[in-house]
Length: 426
Image (cartoon, rainbow, N blue to C red; front, side):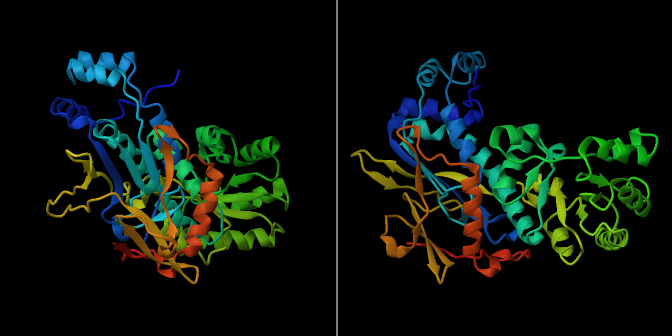
């Protein structure tokens, strides 16, 4: 039985609905937009991720008997509101940037059109999915660039919530990670999985030799042996002695990784294992990966920093009402004026202006523009409550790869700074 996503929301969404039903505003047409007022941590760009997961959750946003019983028992809303929720279906339209695309401050990465009653209930679900996945994707994208073509394994499941781990693995793969250790991400989203052994496997055996022999006997010489449980040079020598020169890889998980990689590479080459790769792990992030660029490292494993957004665990996205129907049925722009948190009213359209193949501006307009404005960024994801914009994770992964090629060189800087592309409002 599919679990409803309807209670993945905040209490105040329902109290607003109850009051709007009383005032008559609930049925007014409304437009909400998701955007970031700024990029967290001085990042140069953001990455859209989570849209595919969100569309699945929106389809299951229904208040069934169990959900209604909970709301009634805890007196969250009154009887008329419960009756409304019993028949709730989102019947509006959703537009958005494609997954894998890039965004900047003010980019309307999701536009929700419907009645106020339908659209306001989606706020928390939309933001919880997009804020998490976009944050992970931005960190992953920076790490992939820092790796310079060397593969990265996502291995952060033990450092976050069990469901967040699955979403993080998906977002990381979307942005170019090679594999994940998370099997549920493999099952649900087709992300390639990989994994060999931990220090516990070595420690449970009487000797390191016995542990290596067992792993080689089970997985073959192409496996990756963990060589820093005791003495690295001794373990490397033993690994090549047992597996031969065709040993797939060794993994180093401690110490000065740059120094250790050089020493291990020299030792492997001297032992004739010139094709054996070196994989490093141990609290890596984009900065430590970049610092290892000159080291003889063939791959990385990243955990904690990836699943926590490498210091920016949220994408700073908000869900704001930008237009609502007035008494004569016309949509009117609305915007909050609060200090430090202003918004721009009116439904938006977005375009990316390119020059010689590179992005030079994000054009955000309150009316549709022609093709001279740039490439349209918003596509329809839902029509009349039905999903029409699904695509494969592989398609999103390829989009991110191609979109990054459009970014100016400043986008790849790891130092804090201004967005790589300016947002221009018209």
